[in-house]
Length: 251
Ligand SMILES: Nc1ncnc2c1ncn2[C@@H]1O[C@H](COP(=O)(O)OP(=O)(O)OP(=O)(O)O)[C@@H](O)[C@H]1O
Image (tube, rainbow, N blue to C red; front, top):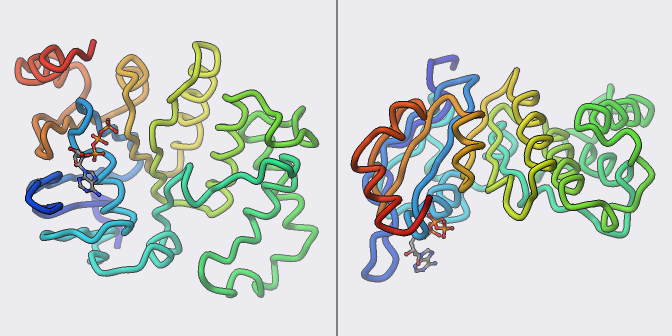
């Protein structure tokens, strides 16, 4: 179903014993946008991601993906339907080369052997697709390098390649800039912008200058609830958002 929103949650709620980590969150992610989920530590961002990818079961509420209710779906089914979270199912094998990692990702069956037996999945087309993905994420000169020996930012690029191998329609990125310095940040931000051209990206990110530069829409969470939502220029002027960040020591 091709509605305006690829992903919607309705009153999404997660309660841990005696503690509400996510409370009645109504998230709307527009198709072909880059959408950020930000908020102070403990705001519930990771919990929302875990709910969306079915690693946690919501206490209440619904999750609609492409108009379909996926609240009760299994993680592999969600990934198969095109919502794929990076840095989680795209684990990189450190002793294998970049090329081997991407080829393995391309053969990953995602809980079904169906992809394996697609006629066009001949070894040759798989290898060509692997080289294309490696080029797309800027790892051409690293294609024979051992994954575990790659510089940090390049490892992240490889993780993005292995996620792209699953052909996500909606890509969920979990703090893609974490632990990176200036040059790597710029490279990965540009890469996200490129891969977002024909898909939707939802990301949790602490680096606000990256969010400001990259994202069309920002949802600010605080204590499990949506505090504000909109473009960065608007959200960053919101007194409640300024208060939430200053109040918890974030810049
Ligand atoms: N399995 C759990 N059991 C109990 N409480 C939990 C569990 N997982 C998360 N929480 C609590 O829920 C709240 C939200 O946590 P969450 O990790 O989603 O926040 P976050 O916004 O991702 O934070 P950070 O930016 O620090 O990663 C926190 O108070 C956390 O302690």
